[in-house]
Length: 204
Image (cartoon, rainbow, N blue to C red):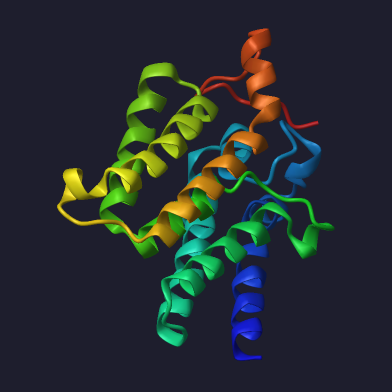
């Protein structure tokens, strides 16, 4: 009963749609504009860097909260990972949005910070580098996500410690979610019409 309650709390925290909330505070429903996504990228294109930063931080903290809650109340790594995954599922399939949601990048990053801050920091750095190189947030997000299972797998030679297999399992599942959730971005990239960083989306 306790475990179920904690998993539900993780899911509900992840389900908080910060992108929608910030958009409504600015007078728009971001689901009806731009890409229609509730994540920070669509907020950036519609409302600018300030609101996007708020959404990114909020979505990241959801994942971190889920892990910290499980670490404080549950012990096994598998349950910590399950709580983190529940937070990501909450973001991707929010009960407040009729089980629709975002792509889980920032929330997965928050989970990563909770379970392995070093790998999370490297991943965020990789994301920044590839945003700078390609100017496509979607490309940077996919590449950064793909590095996480690799970092977990090679954590012993890279960092001098072996990552728990539960953490590796989370990295693989979260990476798969992120890639699948970027299907529309991949299609736009192939068609040559994926917006780059700095391109504004029209409201209306």
